[in-house]
Image 1: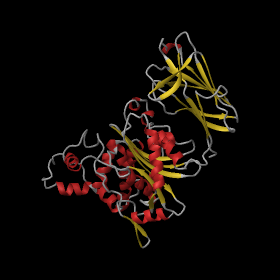
Image 2 (image 1 turned 135 degrees about the vertical axis):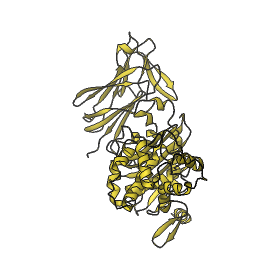
Image 3 (image 1 turned 30 degrees about the vertical axis):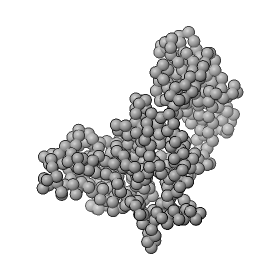
Image 4 (image 1 turned 45 degrees about the vertical axis):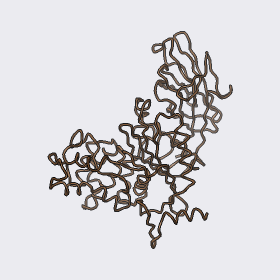
Length: 459
């Protein structure tokens, strides 16, 4: 452990009982940069990025240690990027500080803070920024030489100053509203001058993760913690989810996503069903085709697999409920197909594919053979293609038979939830067929791919 102690000594200066980072960082917690976690993040990233149509993914993970400190692993953790709506996490925290400063209840700005976080409402974000800075836009302020500029920008920098006092600003720009907003479709007046002078909002994974750490562990306005956690609590299969698509059932997921232009980002706190917790900030340019054309919420699900890999590579997955995955390349006892099927590669993904014309009725069946009795989350995964058709997944479970229609032209090579079902140990069967004759042509195809069943924990 000598090498690790030397690393810590080089990164931190111990002053009394307070750890003072040599670079911008939280002063409320001891964080140790861990080369082993760095390697795990880099390995997960490299595996995830193969054959992807985007090239930027910077990330930081924080994992608690037994001594009360936090281990940190990063890949380009200090790299700044346009954060889109992730900046609203900082505005929420600053709003809580502002409420206490002014002797107001933390819910005083709930009419604006709640939609800013829960719906990512840009208009209400502008309301929050105006309220906590006392610096609404000045439409006719068009130059830094205007005598009103200095006072206005000093007020508008309220959130940035407060973060800087906590060691959480660094090389980030946390200043502007998100547009369109309450002061217009685009920056104008003083807000345009501020954009011209300081550039766009910028955030980075490392300090974003530290900000989330201070929020969830009560270092920032501890009496507002429960209120903020309520706003950040999201369903991993619905809108507002990004990394959540890679979490197992029973996970608790608190996050603020950012999605705009080519930006797809998430700052998340996760408690897994095995009790292990982590904070992950991931910044990417993954909001691109084909993903951006997928139906909500899957237009933001592309980083889910990265979260899965992080859990596996960092050891967080030890002790999770069992998962059973069956692929279309498994032996005949687990997978069987009827009709004419052949292997086809789509964007680096190979799967069994069959033509589903008016005259043919191909089908594929996976036998799950789940390891124990219980409720399971069941998902399917397939290579999407324009020539695909809508398909019908039929699940045979303890309580009967259930079906779900899925359009295989969308959501390429990501898990799609079919439902939650009860199975007895050793049982469970899923069949895929074309959804109906009306949407078939002589070139319509359906893909098999893989299915997954993950046991829900006892909650």
